[in-house]
Amino acid sequence: MKKQLITLAAGVIAATSALTMTACGNSNVIYVDTNAYFAPFEYYDSNLNIKGVDVDIMNKVGEKLGKKVVFENTDFDVIIDNVQSGKKYDCGAAGITVTDERKEKVDFSNPYFTSVQYAILPENAAVETYTDGDVSYILWGELAGKKIGYQRDTTGDIYVNLEIQGEDGYTGQLQNAQGTEGKGYDNAQLAVDAIKAKQVDVTVVDKLPAEYIVKNNQGYKCYAVYYPADAEHEKDYPTEEQYAICVTKGNAELLNAINEVLDELGEEGVNKLVTQHLGF
Image (cartoon, rainbow, N blue to C red):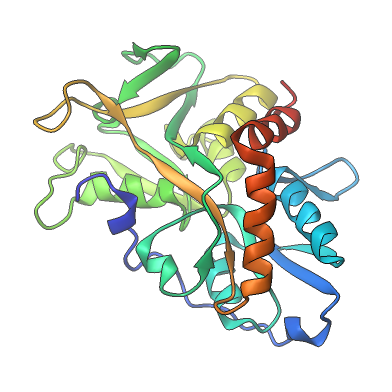
């Protein structure tokens, strides 16, 4: 149970949707709910247009179905409920991790990207680091006694609070560390800005957004966050989660088209989009 997100998400998704426009009111438009502060998957460009990997994928879906695709920005924590209601949005694309709790509310496409959690720290922060192939990482215990920022209702939120609070049958990596606390923000950039504002010491967020933020903001560094080797693992190991696009239950046409596009792109095609939007 202990590190599988498929069993960690209970109680995380807030039921706060209050939208009234119906997606079925215009069958020639696909309305996509997103949170445009999760580069490279979705972000605002200099002209305040929403761009990113998920946008490119959904635009290909629109071409396949002969429909216009409209992306709209909302808070991340309402996306699942918005899509579940089907009142306005046909689907949600925002680097969304597949969990059992979310699958009860929406249908998910095939996974298209696997991510891990990263810690963003001030450039001058002293931490003990390790290497796993070409990955530099720290252990969760390195965050003991720190104020840890995260984006609310994301997997960063889930992981940080699990490790601080523990769970029945599981003692969190940070549960007995005095002074450790988590603090949520509306998006990952705000959670990182909180480091500079001395509100938190470190921010935990998914790998690519972490790398994107560090690349585009001076004074930070980032490392993967690993668990120490245990009875089940011979060596230290990372978190793991899979992204997929969520669709209102029963919308088989849209779900099938999304899966077709993902199959056509394949891992190589998705990674090419990632590299393009990271600017590497």
